[in-house]
Image (cartoon, rainbow, N blue to C red; front, side, top):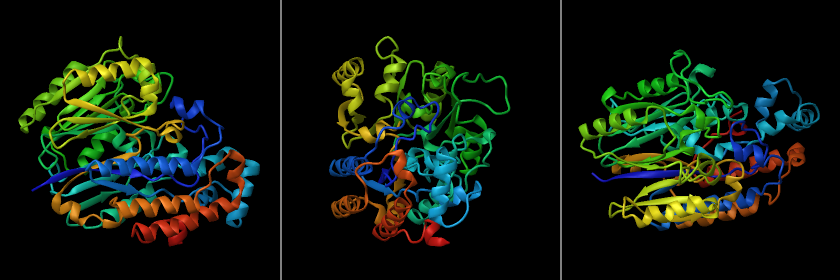
Length: 448
């Protein structure tokens, strides 16, 4: 039976703004308070989706969230009509309004962790929505994320959905940004690679000193249990605390994997040799041949990797067995990174081609190509069971482009977030979007 890795990209929401909300994310903080362009951001994301579709990859869409999140503001003590809640928050607590307007759900690598049916005990594809407990503006996402994923993957014969882990620091879970799967074929049993930044209960694991480690070992272990993964098919590895303190807030900022290949920086992990040996042994036991490409620090410094988002790239398998690396324009703009990439493709290894995309609007807020997509490995029968409305086609691309051009602003500043009209614009757009994507009622304003 044929199997696929489907990339479901997050559609950038109408309130895309540079709030500088993500402590530990260098790009997010350095571009705080600049004017954003939500329309351009959404169109850039759609162009990437279309390009991958045109290259023959199965491509999907994951809807944005309702923002501002008025219900979150009400839980914080603001009251009255929706308009009054927004105006009161703007007057008394502007940072809370900014947080409630964040379009961060666009980075769907953080939406959930996904385990394919070939790995799970019950033979279904399992989804666990990430609690994103480290940041308030992201911690409010998972209820809607769960509803959207359930509307996309509704067939209970093929798909199982789990609620987010307890919303406490000990179980901080950032989703697929800290999860990679290695396999010989997407439809065969593989090895799931969980990367954590700290342990909540075991002091033997070191922790970063400057920035928070957002993923805990205990959260990763809980997700593996929920998904019914066997010990033979799981590897847990710790991020290097020193690189977290340099702005590597997720593993996908310093490493990316696909198929049988891990592409990573020399300083990405602790106990690297031991971890690589475990991956090799466990994948070999499942019929695979694990490979790794280590980028030396003397060729690409961690600082260059963070600023260019070299590793926050998409590693995609071509039909001929070679791999394609999708990188942001910032990689070409960095001389050291670009020189390394030219040498990489010339070396005749598994990565044979580099494609560059302009994702400046997302990049300035701290998210590159890998942040914008949630990978779901599906067998042919499972793909047929996915809501067809969320699978990209030329017609859907045209419809969504027209939808963005109709509903999105081309400039958004912090002061604009206080305009109650923005909420009405967002709700009007999302109500239409749920019909386009055939999602049904998934947003709070549609349910309440």
